[in-house]
Length: 106
Length: 118
Image (cartoon, rainbow over all chains, first blue to last red; front, top):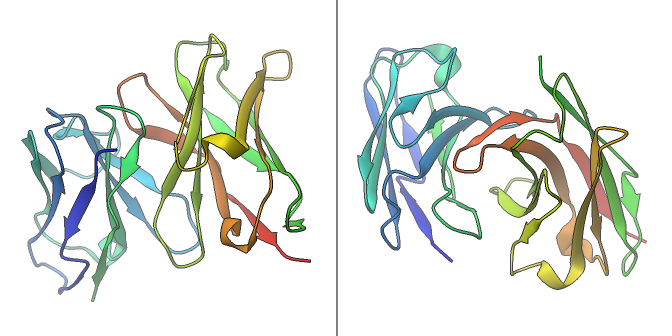
């Protein structure tokens, strides 16, 4: 199975900050990567797929990049509603796997 | 608008079978997409369990493959999860979700907390 390792595991930031979360795959997955945001008690919300394509309705402050084994999720200017846990997920091959999550805190 | 809703018992005894159903509205499950199950133990991360395609073909996570079965009922626009021989380690919120053949999970149910306890 393809393992995804996110860093950092947790991150403290302030409103207005620019933050970057990384996701490293144990083998090349081209651009078959998605990013999710999850708030407590809610299902994950798809933010980005194909490594860099923004899901409809997601603010343009979110962006994704990368290919192969190294990927990043960037939030250009943190808003209060962005404080949540973020997960990457690969769909290059089964089994589908998720990163362990990055908790973004104020 | 695509909506998914999980249903099933919230409490299952150890060694028994967990059964959940996902009812889809606003979209036919016969369309060319996958329908999956993902779980999340309390305070932990996400684990994909398996998916079923509109043709009925399935893919399962090897970590649970011997205990899991996913099926679909097109007449009711539902798909279901059966998970046998459960233990306390299977206590989790179980989500159903839709995904494209090569894409992320774009629509999710609200989740169903299943507790395994005697």
